[in-house]
Image (cartoon, rainbow, N blue to C red):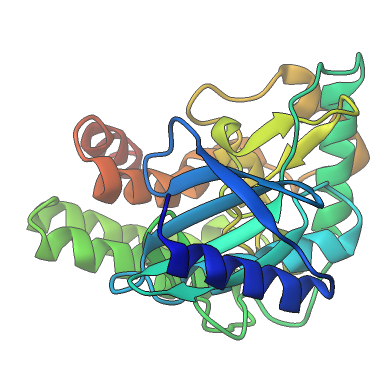
Length: 292
């Protein structure tokens, strides 16, 4: 990352949005990342984390993520990297947060992690959703407010992704029909429960052990939804330690028959992964739908 204009924009944004003069000494490109370019910034105020993407395709993606991190940060429940600056330079959009050094997990790591999530889920509001759309990965996530979770889940989560998947020829008409059948059953499947503040992309790739031995979560897709969504996603893609689920259930028990709703809640992240990565996720989606 040698673009002087970008470095200048980053310096200005950091200094303006953090309220103190920050000078970037150098940037080190980090490995991994399926979606964004990531860097460790060495500054005269310490280490910071930078990620960038194409401004033409995702002009507001990091602005929305910044707002999501701010929302989670303000709850003082689960720890997140403090968001510091977001903006645009040339053809790039960027997000800067504090840099989290990796640590070793405390003996009560999973119990503490679950307790933090249960406290976060107690933050509520009158409607499911958010005032604005945001993203899960690079996929737009619609958050039109509804007072009904089944309506929200159908109209803002499953329906938009089904339409995109069909238009891209990722799924066929039969699968669309199965989806529609499931949407009609959702009011009978989900019990009434207040909206909960969700991380929204709660899987094992979106947390790390911080220097204090406790969890740090990042890459959120924040909205107010049914809290079973976070718990169901935490069981996908490798899952979490069993102590996490037992502790959460002891602190903030889920509604009766939550086990029967896990696959329905997992349908949304599976559809997201089907659109992003294709392949084996088709059969996973098909398997869920065949039970309805």
